Image (cartoon, rainbow, N blue to C red; front, side, top):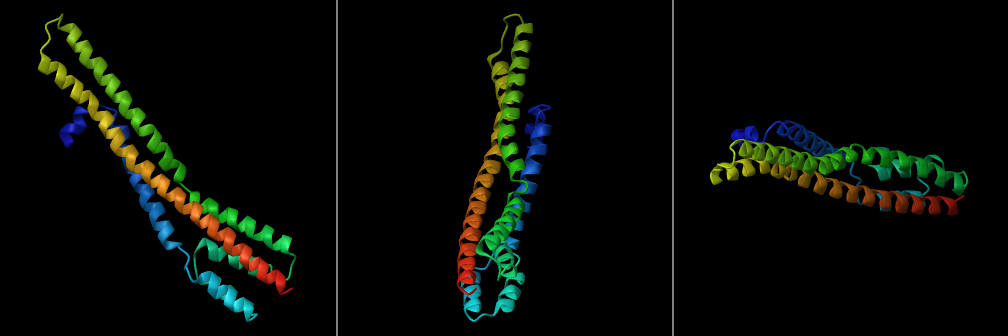
Length: 201
């Protein structure tokens, strides 16, 4: 593995940096999403407490959960008694703040996924240029094994770039789906709570 890395040339170092960044942010985002996951039973429990007019109990329940849906519902409950438009504006603002946290660092994963194959391709092109320059210096006396060796060494960076890019882009896609699901849950749960609070004004 070390020998392959060395044969890949100088562009293997930025590719190594890309792979470290991708792995670090994949782990960071996965940990964040797991730690801030909302309980599936949260909305039914909140609605049940609201039907009993136990607003403080509902707020305490929301604050005991660290997820974005709980944060949005807590914001709606803190604005109870005001107009529906005010409550909707409050949860919309809170939802935007939570989405910003969820989207944090995703652009880096996307950037790594896009730039790694280009770095790999650049390394391959530079390697091919060097291989053909060497062949040219031999003035037509070309050993086929020398040519093949130069080409496969040049292709190492392309393979490395794809090995970095594919996991990064897959992770980015999965995390984006997660964010979209949470965004829908925030909107749906917030609308239900606001509707119920509006009925009880």
